[in-house]
Length: 119
Image 1 (spheres, helix red, strand yellow):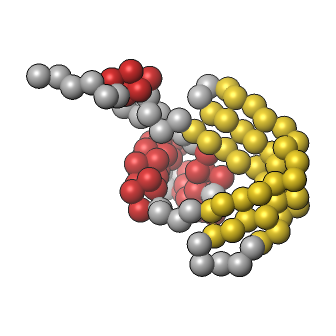
Image 2 (image 1 turned 60 degrees about the horizontal axis):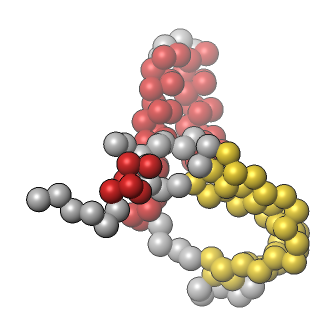
């Protein structure tokens, strides 16, 4: 079973730049709209596959207040306030409000099969 390809990375600088470029290409009739959608789907798949391998930064945080939380479709969303962020080599960075989106990295089939082996 394949991992879900979450679309949350479309809201990053890279995802937004790609979407804007594709929108420009479509409006100038350089590519059809269905190709633009295929490229964005490929972006979702690629970034979800490569980030766990390449991104190894860890950030610790302490928040004074949990403002809101939600769990829907295997995605946790937290909004915390008065946050101190600490990266391994950087000093503390205070933030007024932080939104954390945490997605399940495994499918239900992978979770059920964890720890078992097939001969």
